[in-house]
Amino acid sequence: MISHLELRHIIEAAFLPMKCICHISADNSMTVQLLDADTREELTVTGIDASTLCTAHAIANFVAELKEEARARHASASPMCRQA
Image (cartoon, rainbow, N blue to C red; front, side, top):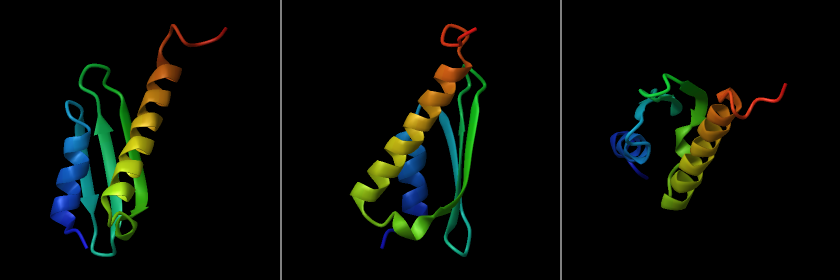
């Protein structure tokens, strides 16, 4: 099993240059907060079961899902993408 410190580092590094803050509590519940300095957008996901992120494949899928969610939120907030 990957340590909490390693898992935090992998996830936080995956979102560079955005700021990513990852917190894992004693019960393996993880919170990930993404902050984009340019757009000042924030995405916070709570209640993630960190024990399910025990393989490189699981971590990669999790990161890809969060990146897609961040992109979707950014696109929906963009004035050019809004429909009247």
